[in-house]
Length: 239
Image (cartoon, rainbow, N blue to C red; front, side, top):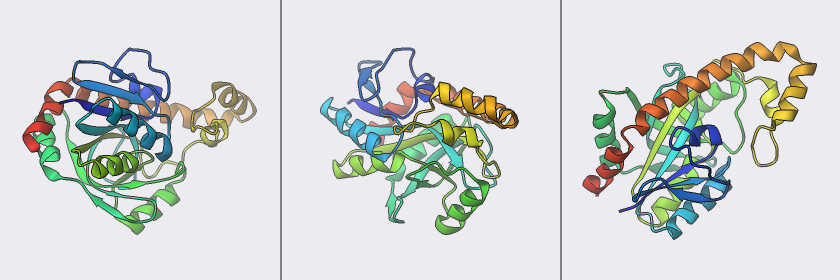
């Protein structure tokens, strides 16, 4: 049994491996776990999931960070989605056995929040927009890739799991520098970021705060990664 993990960002990838993986490619980190570095967004996540299928995976995981939609969530909190809500409002229920077994396994290491995860096709930058999405969908968090991965898993009859940790809380407006420095692939271009900060130094405190939140999210991912072999083995029990 081979587990495929889709990861959108290099910073998220670093919580799983020190191996160099080019965007759009995949690498086995053990005999039974293969990582795909997808890049941001649904299209990239779908392509990466299909690449993993070609490697013979028998279950899929969406791994990385998420934005909080619920005020009860703080940076570093772990989300195990039991339902996904796509950008058109369609609900995808996730088979609960693997979620329950994972929650039990991780309970002594980190508290998981189980609930709905919404899909966003773009970065949701403001607290106002995050609160609006929460009122529309009832989802507790959102990301840009998990729903696309889940759809590929469902189409191929494979077990699916989200491992997502909160980076930005619902009350936080993302610094304008983030959107300004993104390229067409959804990656932050460092030169553009630094140039924007030089022209708008008042953005720096917000970026520092976001960096601290992101580190909390990565620390939780690293904690979960230590249990990855046991976590992936649970999928066989859940089938």
